Length: 341
Length: 294
Image 1 (cartoon, rainbow over the protein chains, first blue to last red):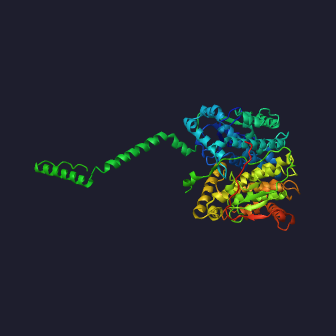
Image 2 (cartoon, rainbow over the protein chains, first blue to last red):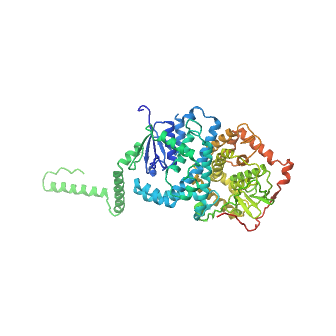
Image 3 (cartoon, helix red, strand yellow):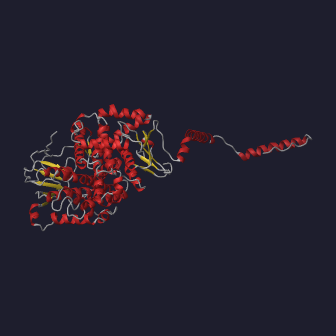
């Protein structure tokens, strides 16, 4: 393994038996696990330090190849030759079209639901997700980033291309989101029926997407009773095959030892060597810059008031030395050696 | 300019689309007096609205549902959610392609099976999300396209200050939406995502005449026809989107086929059914009553 250059994937930390909580990070991680690509997974809690301030991102052996976002990462790994079994061997163009459509369908209908449950549900946010962020995050993350992100997600829920919806219509928006998600779950259930993976016996990239959007729904204990009831999450008779599908992928690919995952407790930055060198001496550089600025400021203040006239000064001292020489001559002494000016 | 305009954006209360839930479907007759309100299709309508309007018309025509096409410049402001097109049925309105399809579904004899429906829905969603985002970006986000085509068209019914301000307001809204919801960053991205969508659609269609089977048409056919025809007939100077569609010849012939079958003037059956009313002035409508189960 050491001969192969390993990539490094950085994403959100996990919980509730999942390697990562964020669906997009989970998608990248599951794709890595399914395609068995040589990637070390690092889990962290400070996306504002990431290259494009987005998790997940992948950095290759050479620091120049940085890919942000699960979509780009999967595309890049595919071009590097790491594919899932089904994709590489016997996928038909018809299935490929189906996979593309299902992927965007799953994302567009389940992402809104997950966003709603994680961020917009007041009870859950206060009791679960905010403490979850507070546990391992820096001060900035705890007090600033969480609220900033929440505002962003809420704004996204309220924006349509036609109008800006008013904020007090959360209930109606929730109903729409849940209805859409329920439809999507039913369709996925029909599509999966009792197969092992979506396209039969072998996993494909589509499985990574579907798993990553289903798994948080099943594993994280959501607090919102209405949503749980409307989605049949409590009884689970309806989506039994989806549940067993998610369990199967988790047990087979994520719990084993073939995926190297390490969680970073303290937020660690990833950087290229130049940035690294700069950051190592950051304090010194800041001090130098500060001191320089202060010096410049003082100089600018004082330079107007001081009137150095260097040639005059020179003449003056030369004159003085001439005088000394003449005085010495008059006194009949040897002239002193002229001082260096 | 756009930052100054931001506080003046229209914000609306989202109201439920008027769709009754009827368990015993298939028995309700299609109402007599139905009007489909759209912006003037030759002068005012912009790319994504045109796509939705065409798709809705195609859907209604495919199922032989009778309606009067009413072109009016204030169609957007009649709709509570600002969605277009707007179906006016007796005393209430149904806005947007989804809602109209759901409304008409209850009144159609020929129903899709669950399996067919779940096979179609991913594609419907794909067209409505990714293709629509691509259209929005190309028509509204791109400066050249916006200045030369979209802004003059959208502002065409209004006089001087309004015909500059209203397009800008709409543009601010669409820019914020795209910024939050789509990863598109340039016209190259638009072309790439459109290419992926078209490839999937083209492979799904194959050599057959329609998407699901050889004879029957459904909402996916209507939707694909609407969006592709809108892009094909648009005259956006920047972006080169038409060429992307022409790479998939079966999609182009599909559009021509639907156009011939359902929009042709020669078909005697259709000629009586759809009489077009063009309304040029802004006319007052009776008060809107929305049935909602809230």
